Image (spheres, rainbow, N blue to C red):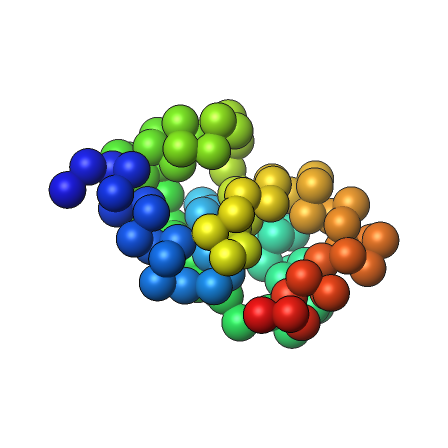
Amino acid sequence: MTINNRIKELLEDNLIVLFMKGNPKFPQCGFSSTACQILDACGANYETVDVLQDPEIREGIKAYSNWPTIPQLYINSEFIGGADIMREIYESGELAKIVAGN
């Protein structure tokens, strides 16, 4: 299975997926921690993928989204953005609306 197929399968199997460094209990970078805090504040039920545990996913997700940094948020298989974009749409109230629709 190619890396793109693995990523696509993860996205199809879960409504909300956060590719991050570490996990929600022990995030390994400040941006990943912020991303989890934002999703938790929205009451999101989400899955995480620790890119530090899988170098192929770590590089593959950057190519898949054409986005150079981690974390990366996907909702309904659609790339939403990284921590800064998440913060912007959270502060505007848009992220809570998107999450509530899922």
